[in-house]
Structure formats: structure tokens, C-alpha cells
Amino acid sequence: MRLGAALVVAAVLWVAGGALAQGLPTLAVAPFWDLSADGVQVDAERMNRDLSRLLVQTARFHVVSPERVGAAMRSLGFLPPQLFHPARARELSQAVGADWLVVGRWTHLDRLDGGDGDPDLPRPRGGGVVAVLDVWVWARGGTRPKYEATFNSFRPAVGGPLGLREAAEEVLRKVAAALSRL
Image: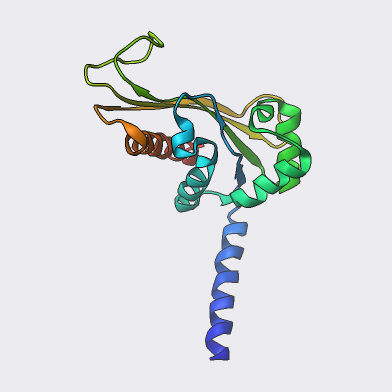
């Protein structure tokens, strides 16, 4: 029994050592800033956890746990909107030991009813949902984002929290794919 446990520990250390030897960047994903109308229905601010999970699956990064990032933000007194400022992003990156800090803001995570609203958003008959996330990646010590992009998804005629969640998850998959190519 002890030999089995020792082998498991040795395997974990070997895998972790191999990853470190490969020089994978350490990445942290901060809680998102929710500017959307309906994001509260799907806890949009905490979708950073879902993105962190997707980034772990790419095996391209060491990903700092969302709990550790949240704890560091609380201890520094930072809110998600403040992380779009380079000094705040740098301070949080250093606090969690990240090479890259991903920050995001949901500009739209909204149900569309075909009525008035943002003229740039699609307005099909029957409504639907739209998800739009701005993402910035700060490199440790950087004064400008290393990467900036906007990702979106639209689901026609699907409303409510389920449709919002599906659209947001599609956006997060797009973000993870893009970041894995950096």
C-alpha cells in the first residue's frame, strides 16, 4: 500500500517536473467584470472558473486556481474593473506568481427580444441570446496588454439562463482556443 502511494506521488512529481522543465507559462484568470443586462442569472463574474478549467485542459499553462486569485484580489482590495489598469494587473500577477493575467468583461450577456436596444446586436424574430466578452492578457511587468480580443456567440430563439449559459460557454471555448495559440 505504501509502495503504491509512493509511486503515485512520484508520478505526480515527475509530471509536474516535466511541465516545469517545458517552461510552461503560469496563467491566472481574474473574476470577470459583468456589464451585461442578464449576466447575473448565470453568475457571469465567476465564469473565470470555467475558463480556468478549459485552460487547464489545453495543457499549455500552469493555471493558478481561481480561489487563489480571488483571495489575492480581496487582500489587495481590487475589484474586476480595476484590473484593466496595468499597475493593478501587475500587482495581482505578482501576488499570485503568474506570468500572464487574463482579465475579462462581459459587455453583453443578454436576452434579445427583438425590441429596442443596441443597434449593433442582431435582432432576429423570436429573440435569442448574445454573449460578448472582451479579454485582455497582461504579461507580468507589462504596461500594455500582451493580447486583446473580443469574443462573441449568438443563440437564436433560446432564452433564459440555459441559453445564456450555452452562449457564454461557447465564448469561453473560443477564448481558451485563442489563448492556447499564444
